[in-house]
Image 1: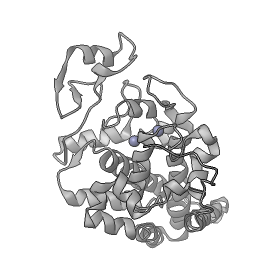
Image 2: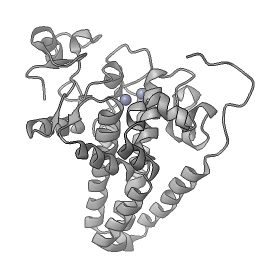
Image 3: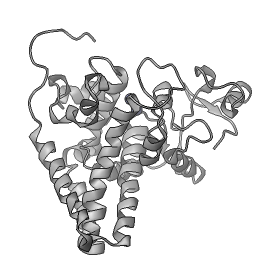
Length: 313
Ligand SMILES: [Zn+2]
Ligand SMILES: [Zn+2]
């Protein structure tokens, strides 16, 4: 779609509600500097909740399941349950998140991208949601244009509308289980770390790192973002194979979310899993396991993807 160039300001002003919500978490996370709130169990709660809300909720559910439909759960209730875990990350409801992210893929590093670093690293990281473009407001039309599948599912609509219940519930859970130390570390600190690591996928992995595939955007693969986001840092691979459930392709590109989906498949909890179609990939180093497997042993799996048989899991 075309974008008319006018002299009207693109930004709508400050998005106060998310700014106050997220800003409050940042202030409360500073309590971590007071030693009386530190325990090793509280730190463990932070790490586990980082994985539960950021890894299972955002990466596995919001991104690979809902945005790209790279696999399906065996039971529909599992889709809603994991979506609720994503809601607990304070990144908004899934319908809006998915809409923004699909638009990112449709216009990566173009003018209509929601968060391209072409407008600065800070914009790509967090300013984009603080002062959103007028074209990025989450209206009914925006939802219907970019996420019609979710927008017509009453459970997803409900979860999106009342998403704020889940971060509050996660705070209550942390306090109930471990008192103030767990609330500070498993609640406040964890929320801040999940937010920034998610945002790094939009900022850092469109700026730093290496490019395996010649995609039409500036996406990169960056190992430390991949570690912090359970595999999302293999972002150039992802832009090359957007519907693939597997983002880490070379054997050393560790992708915890892919391992989780793979395990779920073995347990009979996930199916219709889409693999990278490496036969169409641009420069995968010849002689690599991936290139060899792609050239020799592939079979048809789903509509538009191909499975690597005996891949380098
Ligand atoms: Zn994506
Ligand atoms: Zn991207």
